[in-house]
Length: 195
Image (tube, rainbow, N blue to C red; front, top):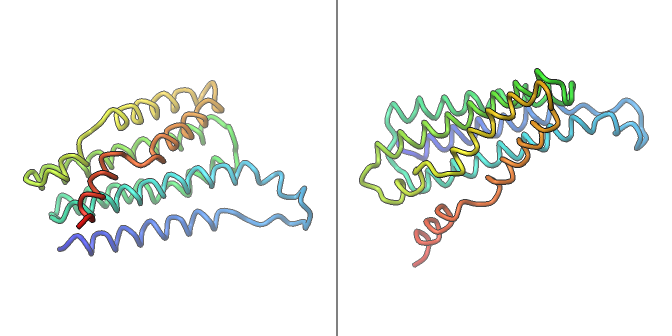
């Protein structure tokens, strides 16, 4: 299989994930501005989850811009990542309905941790399969940001039981850290497209 099919399938799953996320938002019964106020927690959860799915989509796009080999191991590692990302809308809905409650906040962190770990596994397998591709090696190297993100998720899961607002803040900070494009990816991309 070529990487284009893997990208197309992954794009479809992520598009459906975002669609399901949007379906979690229900309009208020009343027709005034005040009726939106009770939905603020759901909007916050929605925004955070949308950002995370967008970050994974961007990184996935950049990874397959550099990589081209697709093996059975890569297919399963990619499916593993998509599985955890597909649970994010449910986790987001639970957080939105029970805002700053310990168990929903911890569960959200568990899903973020497992998604991040699945991303690490995928990049690790891609790096092994494309050992002769220096661009892939640079993109897939586990950097400090990845390690800190995994650690931050573990801390936020624990904090959810005594300081759920702090957990939410950690989730936003990790998203902010990944929102900024990785310099390695941007440099690699520019070198590849320049004539």
